[in-house]
Image (cartoon, rainbow, N blue to C red):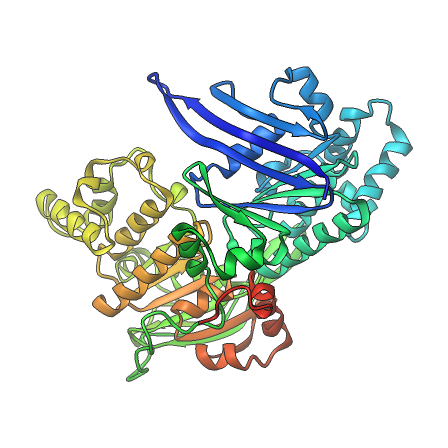
Length: 540
């Protein structure tokens, strides 16, 4: 296969604020052939996004670049900003990770794609520009392209917004499309749809794709070749079959082992038995929201039961109602109808001081630890806040409790005096879990608590949760769009769609014999499924 992109000896270093340099990439070599999809795989800090920015000419001025990046015979490393503008968007398209951040919320979809068209075709105007925009939207299989062009980003789903970004990246039929984690924020079924569509575009237009991902399952399903990066260097590379069946490096072996699988049992073995009365009972919960004169039924007549010491997994796509259900169960939202009981007590209508005291018994861990922790607070103050709020202990005992909590989540007590900016994402999520445990709650609700983490860090957090449940007898509601993750920690599972529970039961039975077509579709869409079917990933 003829090489379209050739990267030789690429090195990238960033100047620090106080002098010196931080080396991000060291002597990387790889190629991408015409029509080929090559994945750069690695954890946060592995250098994969720096490589993508180098190929796109988007590295900051503080970066020092060495080596050569060659696109179809043209050396890109020495291009001026003006010369880069003739390449970026026209010969190399780009699909960023976050469709929410990648689109201007105040401008219509058609205007934003039109900007991408006019970047290299300033004469495109009027009806011709409108037709071109609608053609691009149709190419990415968005229904009613003329209507979508008139809409704003918030009026589209996450999957639709990602297709808009792909349409903008294809505005000038580039030779190479660089996709930087294009589906990491999407549900598995939407993710599958987007990746299927990229495959169709490769076949129809002959576009080569450089896919940046931390998800080895996605890479296994989609790639012609995989390049595994570890701390700025190549750990190994090769075809998915060879690399995943017989990895040559310990690092790749760990990544393969960390990929969650729906055919894997619950971590920690058999679940705790469901004995006695349920700790949490919800009957007939419903919640609707009004928007632009329309009524959206987010949760519709949902009932669940959860016994002490067990985990209830709640799974579904975006818009299925699972996060709204989590907020209703935690009494962060009032229900329009229905009842919530905690340990036999009806807490549905609590208000004022009784509702505040309920917060001590029910704690929540959110998706993004960077936004759920105050960046101005030390870790000690973060862990002391819930204790102070409920007048538990004094300053000395609260710090001692903070050190104890850090020990429970596997962090040293020296972290007490650090700020959130000095910790990694995985460490911050451990702090968020520690904070939730500070008041010894009866129930912990985890809302997409591992979806923003690298696969190996995700595996560590899941193992931590199972260990804490065993040691402390935790009762958990675990919300996720990822069935493979839910399978690893849940005793019982409810599957939601359109605000309703479409299927529920013990986790083992539900995953082994799903009854509803939507559940079967969610399981089939789990990344890595194609690789497992083909025997590329060891299912043992």
